[in-house]
Image (tube, rainbow, N blue to C red; front, side, top):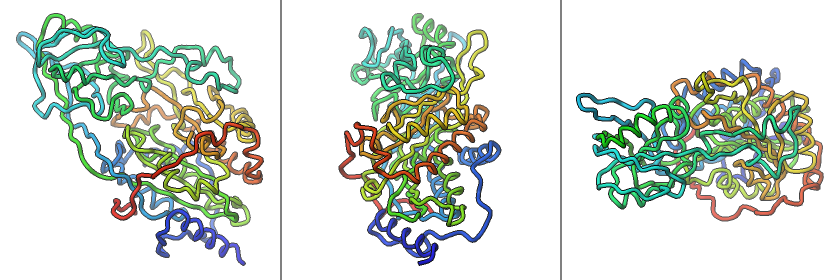
Length: 514
């Protein structure tokens, strides 16, 4: 049997496993005509590809920008020579902000508070907003106010709140394994003040008592919180309209509240029913074993989420190799949605939708947040670059994957990159917990969840992203000669919590993605 026949046969088998629905011949994989292999991305290519994604705009789940990006991604996978499975999607009701702000009504003037951010999925006020007296209400903890304030119905409450006071050791210990070429204390024992760690504040009781809104003064600058879209900082539908204000505006807002000033509070948003699509793309190999590479397609900017672009770059490279140089194993790319939803099943949903692929998997790679420079509130300088790359965490299954990962981090001189024992704090933990050896990566810069006109491309370290992508590709190649038994032999925690249950996907009426 010819090599091309083997590839076509494997493609048909795997796509049958993806869905009982047969694909049309137009959707099947093909072996590209003879051409020069596509190299792994250079820094310039990284910048171009990330800019292409950013040019779609913020890709919040189910938005027009997100649907257009997923459509483009599916077409690019097919253009590279991969098969894409039948359409899959999740039903989703998304929260879309339109206009928001806080205006303090002075005696003869109205002054607007600068760079106010919205509390995602909090109750809208309508386009006209609400007016009411500001009331200083003290400290706000994740569970609610430290002390229940007295206020009249229709009041707008002003709270103080702090991001969790943590170090990286608090997050990664006791599972930390290796940090490349740096003292642990210099990286892991310093305060980790990151906007993405914002807790979920509970304020529904205040709404029940008649509060018209809440203003939360957070201990971060206005420049840092501007555009922040953090679905992890609220219950799915908070009953109280709420806004965040930076600490540099905090004294003025608190003083206005203590003086009993009136404010206009606006959070105009709408709830929209729709769907979010999911892609599974396959590059067939010579065996029934597969390697899963996954990430999510929704995000706010270049870093959230460039894992989808990294998957495409890897697909282009591996698909372009001559047949004799290809991987033995089949590569399956899972591009799932909903990380910015606060409610969709994310990677576990993809895993539940594809149990046959999970059973055949030799390893999995979950890619998130490549190329992150570090930005922080710097005394005397403001919100600015620190000169370092953002700390990057790499959970890995013990054994060959951990050994290859440590070697790769050293070889590519990836500073502030640490390895920890799987499953770690990432969306990819479902694979380790289901018995599939895995490597994942994740960084958490302060601009991670922020919507910005330029997609924060000024904060991209393209050289770093290029080296990170190259290392992942090298490890995928290195494990192609290792048996599943070898990859699994050293980690007794594999398979401790296998995924199960319905996926939540539907295939009959989902949005067309290509």
